[in-house]
Image 1: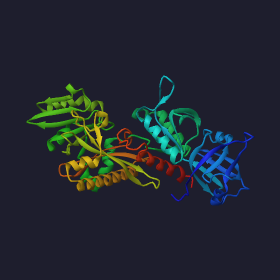
Image 2 (image 1 turned 30 degrees about the horizontal axis):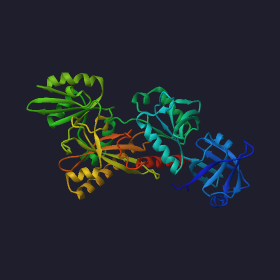
Image 3 (image 1 turned 120 degrees about the vertical axis):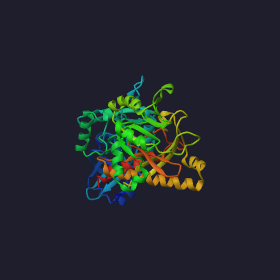
Length: 456
């Protein structure tokens, strides 16, 4: 990004007249921006812009004082707020941002405080990192949007405060429900944001069949992809004749739900369900015809893929894979921001945290399976593969994608396999060694890129 971006704290100024549209800027900042103090300046925040007069003042060069009426016109709470700022000399315009709206479902507790479900603590984390580095963050539901107005929630004094929010520079989609995301009302909301030139990133869940097809179109990635077909009784039988085990997965599934592992031993077919009760999750069949009758209702209810079962290495006899979280950065380039090893619960064949799995540091796990030198090399290769996977999917898919979780496995020969790709990766799997995680900082970087690149 070629824009010169600097963090500035905007401070409510005490003025005698409530409608005073004069802003106070330090002499060094006036000189740095080459501001013409005799000429009005345009102030922009989100989709709001107003005209203001400039007054040189003996204040910190990292502050701009504005009246409460300007806060009100910009639809921002009248409190000290650290924002990333750019100045356009040609248009004599100061742009504050990024104004970031996180879109999700909102539940309400007995004390009327909003709750953002599985990402509630993550929303507070996003508020913290954005407040520290620069920007304004709020959470909203598209149900609370009407005629160009959003009712959202910003965090202040240990509470989420409801307010009439400004239209944001960028929207980060964290809707939990595929059904809600596919609804007509959400599609209308998306169209309205498009008309307002407001980017929404990660605006849809990814289906497993589409992801596989996108990656399989790149010949050099075939080495890392388990054989995958659209599931039918015929394709399942063919795959079972080729491999010791296969996995049957719903194309719109998540969190390891409704996955079926099928294996054959001594002419007995065994089917294991990932989400069934412990005493009901294993079924044995003496013939494929018996198995076919059992699997048929599943295939009628949902669309599935059937996938080659790869003999991945285990950790203490439990299933093991690695989640690599990838983000676009301030320069719109993909990078790996975090990695964890995921170990399945004792009675599970999936490693998802939602299914009782646990996380560990990848280097620790890999070093236990081989040498530390090999572990470092394998983790570096995983991150490289995850970044490449993210880049391909974001190039081939419609819409903006700024965050992906890539699940990678390692087989007995130390070969890497791409297991799954997630457009709404869980916010509960990363290790909380620091209050602010690298992934949260990366999200702010991408939001800043989207907010300011379109205002160049």
